Image 1 (cartoon, one colour):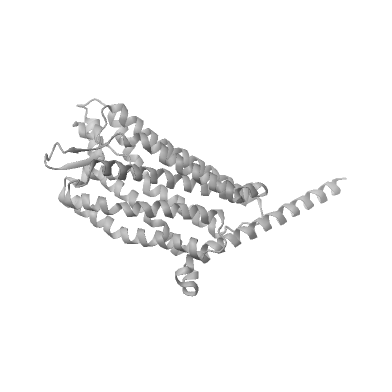
Image 2 (cartoon, helix red, strand yellow):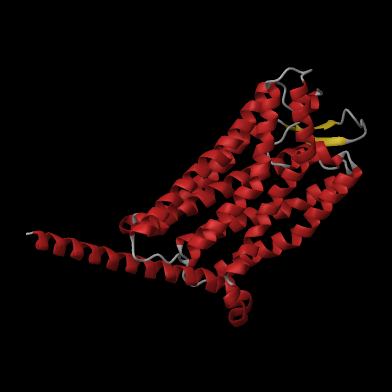
Length: 351
């Protein structure tokens, strides 16, 4: 087993493309074409989302504010993509060492910011549906801004230690090829980095997300108002899509962690290396696609507004979700009043 499997690992996904794809002409070309295909969709879609919210949405709900931050994160990542497309096409890192560290650090921060924002969306919906009486705190703009600032600081902060491993070095297989990748001095560094990614970037957030939707479903079953509002459906689809696009990446992280515990000459380690080399490049490219898929979801969710509103359809979609949410809160109040009345009538009958 070569040290390449253990030491040249990644945090953002792009380095894995370099390790498994850059050195192969067909693979690097295919990866670049895939990124080129999704680049205009991601840039234009996220810019349209940002413009719709800032310029055309008159009443911005909390969900809309979270979607705005998610679009900023995804749109910024799309602007970094041309560097990686050039890297794949040239099969050589032609930029500087600082740029290598900065770009991959920003990719890592984007991963954490995106999942944290999606988790916050789910928690907000849970509070709005389950504890809607106390949801007033979450509508305070100052509170939300503070939470978002803290979220971004956390995402940027936990990405700093990982950037220490990013560096440029000459490929052992092709001495004339300069790589921008991770160099882990010890196997335990691989375990530390990937466990941090899996725990903070996937397992803990998705645990909160799943718990939130379990609570939402239980609440809906107990009420007469069983109609899901559009924003809940949209957030649920965003959550599922993000999970599907990032699950392969974290699965490859787990494969790499497992490889560090096996003897160098074991067949099991050789099989894990084969799996890692076969799927790491694909799983890494898929993570970039996750950043351009949300505007497509907004388009499908707001298709009924397109003919009437044109490019402003997203603004009407977000405003419509806000109105539906307010209607649901009023319906929840009526349901609770009715339940109290029925309970009082039941007690009177017993007396």
